[in-house]
Length: 444
Ligand code: SAH
Ligand code: SF4
Ligand code: F3S
Image (cartoon, rainbow, N blue to C red; front, top):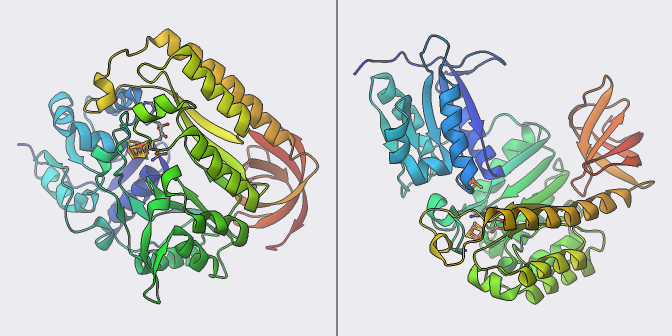
């Protein structure tokens, strides 16, 4: 085997969910600790990590086309590592199909990247899709850099086994990270500039742990203790499962000021038979009941959800109930997908897989309803004042972009800086963003 030079520069490209973005950041930190530098914009990197997502079909296809696109004009390729959920699910296939890939590493094994790179530099092709007993979090370097908003993985894996979903197979069983480690990582993020932390988990509200006083606590306990850190301004969490939406967590929405008024609570479908076939273990009624309670303690809460249309056997009438649910809830924003059969999942072999044109039509109708509600939610902000956390510069000179408490993108002009929390008045509302004028800069 031909030895390859040890890489001097890297690029990490993350696809899929926010947890993958978090993992991508941690891999970048790990590579930096090894003395490998981030490649400058537009420049070739010696090492490229494709941090992949396996949730829907096209996601995996995209990986192969990305691998192809990495080929340089002279026919050579950078050192390519495929990480993430496609690596976990299809590691062997990737190695067989894409000879330029030298490393395949799963979501629970990426702390071993440095030794894999050394082996790859010696000319070996290495796969590590273990779900080792030692946790990557104990090995990864401490957080040292953060923008104004940061992700923090508190819980990983899923025991729910929805019949359509690959996540329980690619991420493994539900594991909660220890309370002390999370408080420590949060403090480091805040010291490095984070003003907002989004707690992440495949079922983030299934998190449980033992707090500093030795008491067993759920996610709301962690949220309350994080809220006590003076320099942290905002807390969010995602993604939650209806079955783990505890009374304590709902109550926190009414009591913890730093917990932002936004709840992403996927429902998937508006019909109980379909929900049962999906193994969702909640009903439309129990879902609506949760929303009612959350709205009671936090009337201005922005609601968000995920939907799948065209699950095997879904009838027209059953789909109509999804539209009815949307009309009832009036979401602020949502994600909606055509059902995609995933290898190894029970739904993939169910009878009555629906044709693409049926799914297309349903998705269009659903998205029209969701877009209508998103625009209405944004339009209702007109004339209101709210706080915006400034995340970055806008496209136009002097323009800033940030987020409202309800996770709307807001742009405005004026005297501000990244990381400021500013008071603005909303003056225009589009489907995807709000325009505002600066009223007061509290951080100045
Ligand atoms: N853990 C989260 C979601 C993880 S996946 C939860 O349970 O809510 C994100 C979303 O992708 C899901 O909510 C679902 O709407 C969608 N999804 C998952 N598997 C899918 C599939 N096979 N086809 C289409 N959409 C899917
Ligand atoms: Fe997938 Fe269901 Fe687990 Fe969410 S709860 S990650 S949709 S199996
Ligand atoms: Fe995708 Fe894995 Fe996240 S499949 S959605 S990257 S958990």
